Image (cartoon, rainbow, N blue to C red; front, top):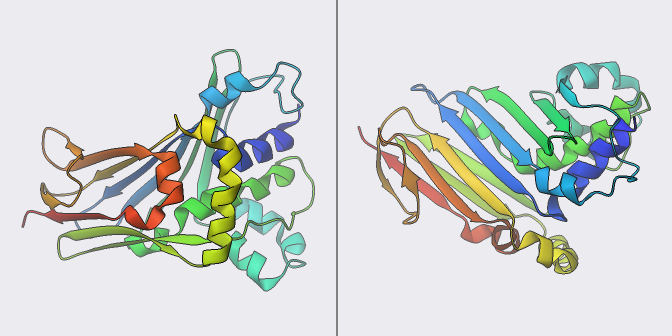
Amino acid sequence: MKFSKMLTAVLIAVVFVACNFTEEIYFNNDGSGKMSMRFDGGEMLQMLPSTDSTALEKAIDSTIVFKDVLRDKKDSIATLTPEKQAKLKKLEPFKLHMQVDAERGIMNFDLFRDFKKVAEINDAFNTFQNASSVGPIAGGKSMPGNVSEESTRVDYTFKNNRFKRETIVLDQALFENSIDSLASAEMFLSSSTYTFKYHFPKRVKWTNINEATFSMDGKTLVHEVSFLDMMKNPESMVIEVELEK
């Protein structure tokens, strides 16, 4: 079973193959909570030929605890540049649940963690992409050095009953290069979606997202967008929410 090759291929393919993402956050009254970044790759699994080198011999349902992985591979990590070490360090609070079953057409990845303040989960999308670095680790090899460059960052704030999510472009040239790289995959990405699902401790009083839907109790906001549109114009995806007092 080429598990490490499969995992690396899947996570790198996140921005190149049809996929469905869900960004879900649960908030407690004190501002703490839990975040989950889920990737449904069932469609991608169906696209892989039966002879593909990433194919699995049996189903997988397991969880990687990055704190343990980074501790076990600390000697390999120490050989990387400080910048790459810092990016891998961001994985430490996360766990990754993987469920892959080719016969049932299931390929789900869930990167999740608890937080005391929502700012602790800033940049979670890039962290999900950098999780591809665990591929060789899972196969028992040394820590790789190909941590991805980051052209954007997502920031969250939640205080005084107000929540905000916004994306900041860190490197315009790098960002434009990443957009150019999507051109050949637009046919696949045109059907891909990104869903925001936020659970608040109080009812939502107002949001700038007119297309958002809400749960019966008014505390959960759901908003689905085109993955391709969001990747091309991430700064336009600003979500603001005001809760009732």
